[in-house]
Length: 93
Image (cartoon, rainbow, N blue to C red):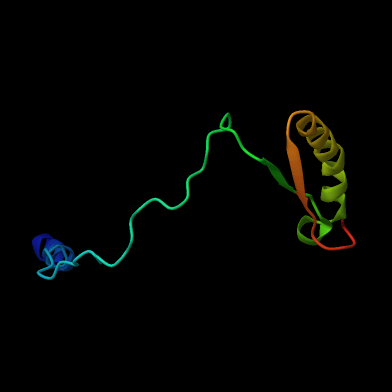
C-alpha cells in the first residue's frame, strides 16, 4: 500500500521532468550592443540630478523630515559640481 501511494504521488513529478523537444531559438533581430552605461562615481560628468522629496507619495511628515538632509546634500554638491533639481510640480518648485 505504501509503495502504491508513493508511486501515485511521484508519477506526476517524474513525468513532468521530461526534456522539451522544442528549444527556443534566440531572436537574432534583437540588438545586443550596449547602448547606455552607468559611469563610475569618479567619472567626469556634467552634474548630479536630484529628485526633491514631495508629500504626494509618502506624506508631508516624511517630506519634512528629509528637507534638512536634502538641503545639506545639495549645498555639499554645489561646491564641486552642478546640481539639477527635479521638482514634482510648479508649486513644489
